[in-house]
Image (tube, rainbow, N blue to C red; front, side):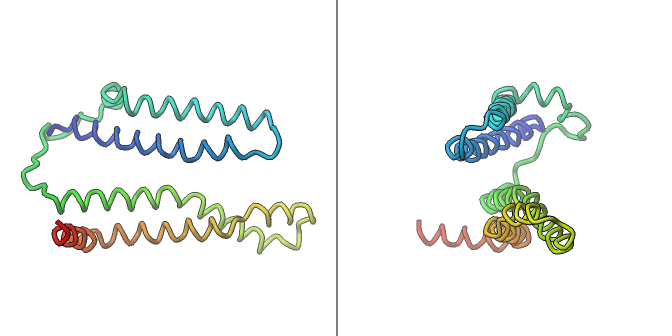
Length: 176
């Protein structure tokens, strides 16, 4: 496997991930709206087009991205030795990727909710009633807990990838 092949696989996997994220986030935005808001509709269309372009480039113009960002330059060897790659190594790699994606997907909303709660605790006395109500409505405690839990699970996946991969391999051999 060459360096270019490795980057091609990584970019395509990230493109598939972006596509699934786009589908899961776009569908609720388009189906649930409380009245027609033209500005939000335009923002949704712009978001759809931009994410569609990103997914298109990641999935179908991968080689062009590799050349544009010069990803295959600067390596001592252009070939990656795959002799030592086995099932356990692939499971470890997959578990690490899943853990990283869980953390990356949830860290921004989690920190945002932490900031909003901090703001609510500190500035409650200095806010008027309408600002206080808006701040209370913008903190979704269920989503905040879910994001924190996903970050925790992602960290467990990163720290215990050896144990998890061995456990999954042992369970797979017992079943088959």
